[in-house]
Image (cartoon, rainbow, N blue to C red; front, top):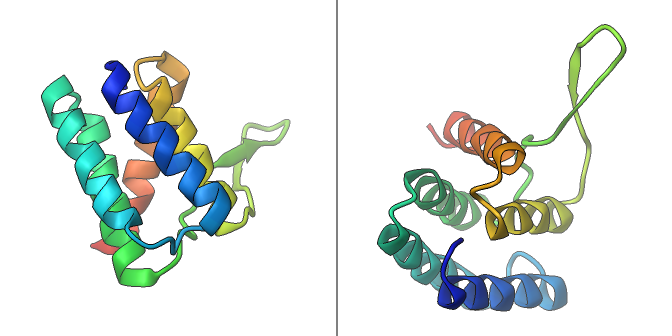
Length: 119
């Protein structure tokens, strides 16, 4: 997120999830508002991953998306087992610096995983 307002919204969402978890009251509405900020910033990747995230949370009441992977010596990738709350917090923290090259790649991984799970 680029604007100070969007980052403030994002920080507020992160704090809410840390305290109340992924089923926090109003979380989906907060994500929808953050998506509006991303639309203004004209970042289609962030817009899409936010929409997919709140749709996933509404549909499953969980965030058990396999978006993080580790690699072994041969280059094989394996999904990392992580709790829903920590998984979602990781994605939100990636969004704070969504223009960073490595973060964008990981956000794309989440986008792909969310699309596969939802559709």
